[in-house]
Length: 168
Image (cartoon, rainbow, N blue to C red; front, side, top):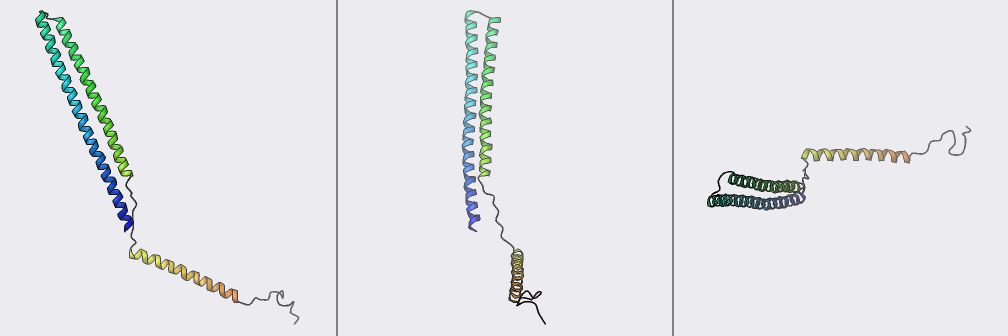
């Protein structure tokens, strides 16, 4: 039936649009992961370079002990804070992406028509026809009875119709 085919075509279009939206999210997730990885690697590279500079300066100046340990501790704390920010930023971006995925899913489901089409069975059709036939027959009998009643001659009640009281 045409209405069913139209509904199926519209639902297919909605599913394809939803799939395209999910594909866009996949690319966005890969981009978030790549940026996070690049930032983590850059942070690790900076840390290793900074440790190397501290050790070089300490070796060149002949400084050992507390001041070098203090500088290295500061570098580890800074690295920890920076890595923590990178992870937090990544998680926030991914949470936003997952929320967008849930919205796409809801919108995709909401845009699909779920109207059902029922084809009546032969029994249901037969019962409907029989019920309509009985109603028609009953209405016909009622009309026939009323027609007969309207064609009857009026009865004389107490002599009020037809010229007065019967004087017999």
